[in-house]
Length: 598
Image (cartoon, rainbow, N blue to C red; front, side):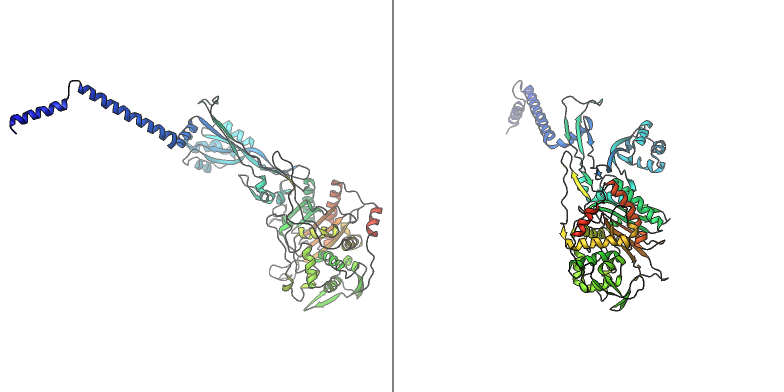
């Protein structure tokens, strides 16, 4: 190619790039159009991303700037006594909080706030020095303190409502009702056992707000309803619970004892009307509440168990109350010697005499006649060795060894209440069986449950009633136990105008190191009185157990007086009239005759 040709060709190339006239302005328009299309595509893409990809972030931003969410507190259900009076209820208190991001000098703010909260300055300042926008300074603040916080007008410090659980009977019912955590979760007693029923669930409200704090008409408004907890009505009588605690504490002081338990119930229904524990602290002060030893404490009942042993003997058809046999004051069983409380010659004791006089030897002789397998069978039917079904946490089943594990003396010791342990509630339930014509009725402490806006519903019992002994055997035993109070070891349990049936128990307390004696050869005792009234038609049952009494060790003097005092108050409270002589005559006339001799 010649130079001139290359020149033309170069010129031609330039002309091709330059294009015809007007081409340069048209190219700019094309570039602009392309740019606008790209921008439109970007906007569409961003809109799609905002609509579907960052929805949560946008909602969060909106909540921070236009939407205001507030909690709606659900109220925990009340625990009520049998008449509807509150034993546990919730009231509105406050929690004090701080927004550390708005607090300039935490130490200065803490110094101003500490006197109102009754708190230390340094811990408050430390809480307000942490990163973030929310920290609790103090929970469960009463209304007057919350008002004091508001009056201070401190920047970055405020209050939010929260519920506080109150217990009108205080320590007098705490071992039954229990308690809750700061966040209203049950941690003991009925509060824990029925936490699922009592617990509430919080709700919330979401509103669109103007910057000034006013609601936007027609704006976003969403709400989640709070659900209150159900109310529980117990079988407990608040007034009788208070009296039971008072009487027990006084009796523990009177006998200079380590503690004690008292339970009041209704035999026919298994309802528990009152249940209290008293203990001494390290300083010697008698305290009410704390551990519910009515269900957690398993002890050897001593002679109180004789009412069960002879109910079995009577039911098995081995004897009637009038059946007699020769009873010495001492007896060797296997490798051990047993004795009655007081020396006596060989006596012709009837079954009635043995129970009224609380003869160990007479009881052992009849226990041997009954046999180990039958005695074990009857005691288990009376509820020994098994929990009551109340479901309260910490309840003991006691200890009734399997017959296969009995030693050569087990039959003798168990028949008179040693080598076997039970809780105060188990023993009361067993005597309720005698009061109920031989039918075991499970214990109850929850009368009904009422959900918000609903009707009261009675919970289904865990255990079913069962017959333990015949009605005839139970009625015979009721009469014998009435004579224990009338002329035997239980005289101090008597209540004017009412026939009381019951049994005393005075048992040596096992030593932690084994045996019953301490290093100095001394014994510790447990004194018991358990029974019911009126004997001919029982309406009330009671048990009093005094742990390690010292001024007197016997059930008839250490426990029976408290039984009588609470019984008198309960009879008036529940308006139980004394039975007429005609009613008592009809009960006695129904007894089968029997005066056999063994």
